Image 1 (cartoon, rainbow, N blue to C red):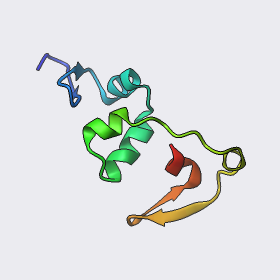
Image 2: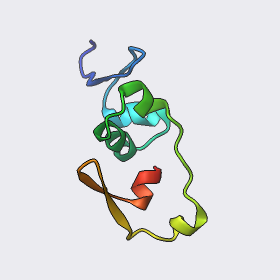
Image 3: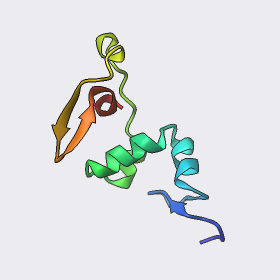
Length: 79
């Protein structure tokens, strides 16, 4: 591993940080972390397409519910 490399994706590509790895796959670090916490493997967490929020949910950010022992908002769930 090259000096300064902190992350390696499922294909063996090395990145300087999780932020750089997530940017390469077009997802936020927050979304990546949520997917990992939900038990997704690395490949799925990086490559699964983001879901668009329905219009009626885009306006609502306060609704939360419990899932697998944690609490998530509707917005987080759809990301």
